[in-house]
Image (tube, rainbow, N blue to C red; front, top):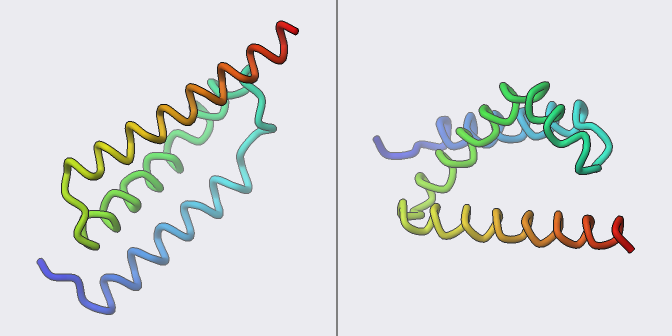
Length: 90
């Protein structure tokens, strides 16, 4: 189904709404609270992920490009967690 201005606008709004809810409910950014954040905000995170995926696909991203983006995000998160762990150990 091609994207129309109405559906595109709705997806933009859903993504924005999910992002705002997530931001308002997220805990302080510490590794010890990450598991709690995922559990507490699981519905919001899922909604945001679904909306982001729909946006990417509707804007021409292939499945392979979405996987590449996701892999890069996981790599960045992994590096961030390692750096935090190193700072704590020092």
